[in-house]
Length: 639
Image 1 (cartoon, rainbow, N blue to C red):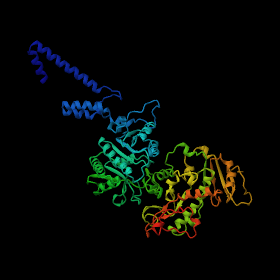
Image 2 (image 1 turned 180 degrees about the vertical axis):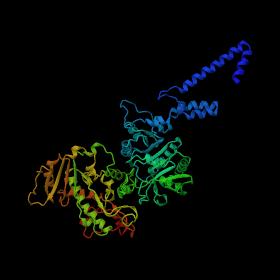
Image 3 (image 1 turned 135 degrees about the horizontal axis):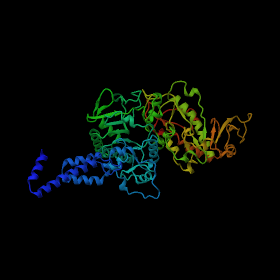
Image 4 (image 1 turned 90 degrees about the horizontal axis):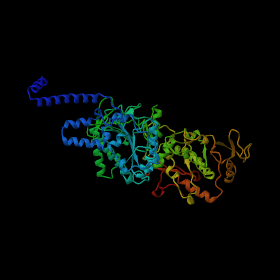
């Protein structure tokens, strides 16, 4: 009806107005045809602009403000990523490990600033996985990335706390951003002021990323992924935060979330997943403000304090989630059996006993700093080393340890039986270290059997309620100071460096065939008995019979013929070596290896409760495993 009236009015008006009306109507018709054609015509997938993928565009038009329209156009120019469809970004991420061409110039630092656009380049299904560190943790970061890419996961990002790391990762083709920390490139050490600064940086990072609207799986660099965690995390869509814990007693025997009412250990922030909800953003903001206000607060303690402000009730009867923090945050505790700590994985092997597949391992509960963490991952064949690590120029020395059943299985598991078993093994390791030093070979450490667990506090041998089996193969850092063994000590004072490898080294798939196939077994025999004499003859089965209690010259004479052999493996190490002929070298060796052993901790009836291991316990008649009885006795047995 409106159209009919308009035409009638036009007909009754002057010719000029008739012409104008006709022109306008025709223009509207043609414009409509053009718009509908544009909307429904096919656009190429790489089109620079799409109405359907730009909700921000429609929101701004609805405001009908000229100023807002101008701001909109400016935001499109500044952040073109925000106008592209998130779905298309998720489907194709730039490949990792594709290093830039050496002829390419390093981009300016501005290109590595943390922005929504930079993060969105690494987002898939609205999730990004992030870790961060400084150059001292470069090998941990490469290991972390390699595990994820081996699992087919590429929606990851690494925060660099120093420029050296940023440049190194860029040239390896790893997505990296600048945290602007200007941090030292060296290992800062657990508990140091710089360590606490790193913790605050983590919280600031979480608080910065959550407003971008992406789910954030935040990880420490000293952990590795063994299985894709994203499908598991997606099982709990209502969770605002899912966190790992230091729980050592299982609360479930399947892959459900741990039962929050039964978890008494600290929540560990080395692995946790954040959804960009209002509750989680509020938590991150308050956590950050707490740490910025007091630099003495450890980030993990701060998180636990805030989250426990209110804990309970359960969100429902099925999910395992709990209301926490302000009563609105929905929190879930990742099961310690499959999101493993250094204790549930390396000591209890909880996942094996429960027949579960672990998702992650975090190298907590260990005793030798960063070198100890690295060695733990190597023992588990989870650390990615450079090829030269697996092919030492001087070759390797290994041996088959022996331990009588009575020392391992008989009697009660207590301090005395534990030390008898461990000391028996220490003596063999001491001999092997001497031979490795003499032959200039890298020693492959044997697995060590323990009857008691090691912790930082008094305990009855193993933690009550844990799944620790007795005896068990304990990590090397339970007995030895791994950080000292790997440290470069002055040769003029401690003699030649003795390199070591983890007990699983020769089983590692990364070991090259040229090492695996170059092997000599050494069988100790009683000197003077049949077929037991000093000789460099080996059987076709690559077996050499060698007299027990041989001296330095005998070792040098015989094994100089086998320098080309990559692995010399002693089938027994007991009574293999009499000792160094050069007494000065003997003293330097003794001084070196006395530094190697650590402590066991702790008895319940004495303060202090730790007991020192002694590399030369057998030279001290009546030696007993007892804690220091006086303050002046509380030191390693270095004399």
